[in-house]
Length: 151
Length: 151
DNA sequence: TGTGAAAACATACTATA
DNA sequence: TATAGTATGTTTTCACA
Image (cartoon, rainbow over all chains, first blue to last red; front, side, top):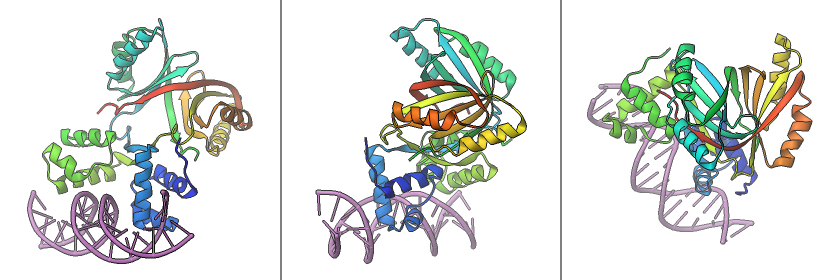
């Protein structure tokens, strides 16, 4: 585990909200020079605290208006079946996230589709045919809010 | 809805995986000049296809080893109670995502905590006391894979 | 689209605690 | 030893012809 001082935490908090801020702008707000800020960011990357930068896409604007969470229960739960399931599910482009969880369902999948008929196609042709897939529960996402998290 | 040509889609796909690529490096791979690449990215931002850039943090390395999904059923479901609930839940720093969904539960919350005792504290002091919160189901996340999604 | 100024990144070197 | 600052080269961004 990496331990951070207050400045590192402030940096991560600021970058978690908007990663397209310059080191000099960030440093100015924290009372740090541009190279000092840059070095801290680099150190956090090397230490593994920062895994990378991702684009936040607007799925709706790109024609993917339907997001659904699927709870999937496996019929058989050996080590092999988990790996088979994960491999097969990773090959479905509409699956945006695969969560292996503890509870009533074994996996939670975040699936993005153009519309409801498109989602039905994915569900019937892709999800229901997954190796080992048993019971499936679907939850349509009405709205969603992302927050920076603790720190 | 924005419509994209094949080059735009290739750009978004590449940036969705790693947003810290320069316009010149991206353009080189796509057979595009640096300014042309840069202008396309800018156009996609202005059109709203790109909402921003986020940092991918390593929660475990930062001492937040426990991620739990909570399904929350509201006791009363008027318009006011939804807004009250959402406002109150947004004030909890450990809540990383709030999903309003259709199904057995009304909301799904992604909660990040340092460890299980820390999670219990959040659950008892913060979640159970939310206005209108009824039944709560918890699913500990064992592992997780993020994928670029369709496009 | 290509060019060039302005900005940001990245590194060397020095100072300070 | 660890992290700050100043100075400076390099790359990227971004506007304009």
